Amino acid sequence: MKRISLRKTALVSLIAGAATLLTGTVVADSEVKARYRANHVQHQHETSVEHITSTAQLMGVGAGNVAPTEIWRRLEHGEKVECLNCIPVVSKLLYADNQKTREIAAWWLRRRILGVFGPGQVYEQTRKTAVDMSASETQRAHAVEALGEFLHHSGVGPVAQAALDDPSPRVRRSAVWALNRLNTEGPNGELGQALSDSDVDVRLEALRGAIRVNVFTSVGSVVSRISDDSPLVRKRAAEVLGAMRAKDAVVGLVALTTPEAEPDANVRAAAVWALGQIADPSAKDAVYAALKDPHPFVRDAAKIATRRI
Image 1: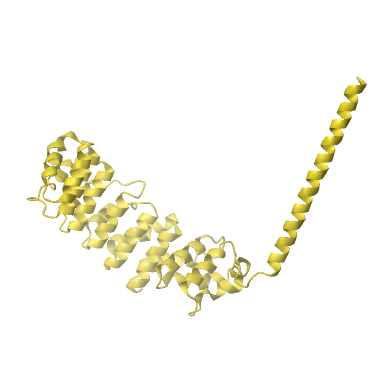
Image 2: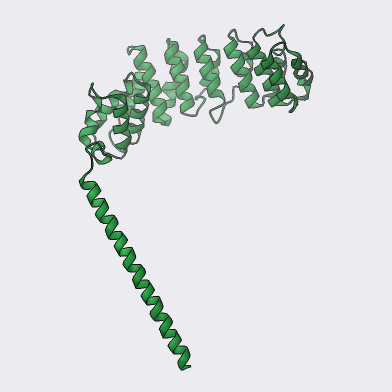
């Protein structure tokens, strides 16, 4: 029994000694790190994060001599700085010429707890500008884009209105983009309605949004685009229908697979690819016939499609 007690005593002493040594090492390491940090802070450059996020630096982002990259850096590093006086300055950047500057300005503003979303404040002003016909085309376009970047549900209404009613194709395209950014087809399916817009760019933007928003119910409007006057729209419509696995589009897509019906090889290739994605047996003959298409793009698409159909 005495030997066992001696062994236990020795073991406890050994463990205690090791713990003391280890603790001493940890304390020493902590002291070294603390001294390093203190020295580092003492010699920080004036462009360090701590200086960039200052109120004075944020207040200066609207100065005409500040480069866009410097504006982005200040706003990004000032993410958590609450500065009510900075909000009017940053809000002007929503209408800057540089697209990324506008995007980052909206990002910074939407993260404010106060001063942005209240009555009469920046967000409400932006909503009004989006549908204000007395504002310039550029201002309206930038306003609807800002509403998309704010990611707030109350922006859906004015954005959807602009997507259909604004006389400017540029504004309508921006509004359709904003619907996509807000992840909605609009309260009355405005994204689907935009597929029939008179402007090609608006229709293309609407097709892009059709497969990006979580809920899209106007598949029939996409099907109608495979007979669009623009080959770019026909091609994109075929790709969207393939991504949607839209079986209702098979007949129309089959009609696009022959040179006689569709002179644009890119459109034919897209149609064949889409049929392969949908994998409806009724399209098998058309896909195999495309293996003999005069254009290599179409033949390549057909080779891939035959593996799925």
